Amino acid sequence: MTKKAQVLGVGIIGGGFIARFHIKSWVGVRDADILGVFDPDAKRAREACALAKSLNVGEARPYGSITDMAADPRIGALWICAPNYTRGAVMEEISHAVIKGKAELVGVACEKPLGRNVREAKKMLALARKAGLLDGYLENQVFSPAVVRGKEIVWARGAALSGPPYLARAAEEHSGPHMPWFWEGTLQGGGVLNDMMCHSVEEARFMLTPPGAPRDVLTPVSVTAYTNCLKWQEPKYAAILAKRSGGKTDYLKRPSEDFARSLVEFKDRSGKIVVVETTTSWCYV
Ligand SMILES: NC(=O)c1ccc[n+]([C@@H]2O[C@H](COP(=O)([O-])OP(=O)(O)OC[C@H]3O[C@@H](n4cnc5c(N)ncnc54)[C@H](O)[C@@H]3O)[C@@H](O)[C@H]2O)c1
Image (cartoon, rainbow, N blue to C red; front, side):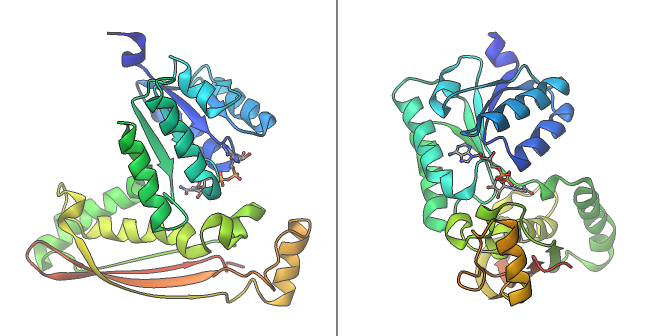
């Protein structure tokens, strides 16, 4: 067995906020090391590499491009942790490097959301498949110990007495993103719906999926949703965003929704309807 097959070498694309969480969490991951980081901001790349080394999760080094990192035989998989507006270009470069024989990779995993819209998300998947790569989606909430244990208890105890659950509610709120790009609908893909509801819908769906059953036992059949900008387009809050971003973020002219709720109906394999209800907001004060 080659060294590459024994320990998966992972290269991280985008060494920002979420990359630091991946690196810190790697202390609980076996048989894979973080061996590289590419970020156009070289300082960010160096800092992320230093963090990985300090935690002993891999001899990470910065690379000058995605293609350079992918081409290094130490690297077997890439983690996409760059901003949403770069998804297409990043995946094009990975796919191109593999198809042209510059890189030999096992797979690619992408942070949420997969794209700014359904068209981009489908393109991401198509590019990964075209290059023959295994693909992963980095949704984290369904692995949270409280959610995993909560599901076990609901199904082992509650469902044993009163039947399988038919309604799951998920709510998530914070006071809004930490970077100016994240507030721009064109760059992020929208507001809180795209940013946080991808977690809530998946988590509630997970709770309703019988333990051990494949994810596709539940098929979405209808979606209703509501969005609004309740807080951040108010002049006093818009002024805070403008100040924090050096004038870049203008929620008086370009607001995105800071509140969203949805109701998603799923059909199980027997035809029974189960419902997911979510509420997400950037309005926490
Ligand atoms: N799972 C979660 O709970 C969670 C939480 C936060 C962010 N995220 C996701 O992680 C992704 C990144 O968000 P973030 O908060 O870390 O953003 P961030 O702005 O803190 O970090 C992004 C990094 O990517 C770099 N970058 C910019 N263009 C790039 C490119 N073309 N190629 C490579 N790197 C590039 C930036 O220099 C920056 O260092 C987003 O898609 C976001 O939705 C997920």
